[in-house]
Amino acid sequence: MKAMELPANAACSIARSLEVVGQKWNLLIMREAMLGRTRFAQFLKIGVPTDVLTARLSSLVDDGILERRQYRELGERARDEYVLTDAGRDLVPILAALTAWGDKHRPTEQGPSAVFVDEATGRPVTLVFTDEDAKAVDQTRVHLVKGSAPPI
Image (cartoon, rainbow, N blue to C red; front, side):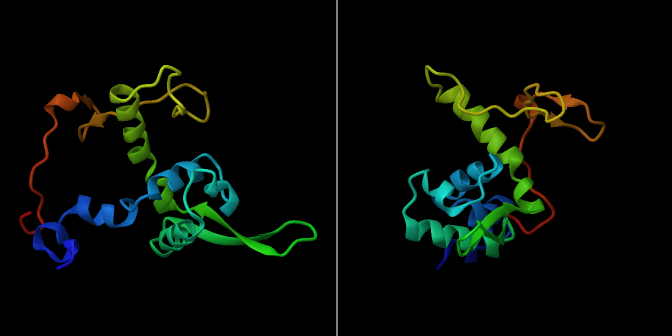
């Protein structure tokens, strides 16, 4: 039986999300896309094998995370580039959370390799939990509880 066929996983938002972004290389491909990289050769620089990259880009397009567009350099054949969709841009908080966790729990001597910043000011930004009144809530007070879907 496949993992997503189990009732505990089929109802779980985390499990459904991991079906899309949990494949090896997908989050690094997303990081590159968020850095503005769009071309196959640019994605190869993360060390992903060519055949795997082809499959991952195709699945990210099928899942609505990336959009495939054609481009043509002068004098060359048409090629595909991969651009973030709205659903892909909605993954920014996930990558920001992973970045913050990595910087805190797996730091390097050189410091962070990437920083999330406000586009208008260039100032660093961080993720926070807020309540329905937009008031910040300390993450030590945040707990996961069952939602309205069938039990997990």
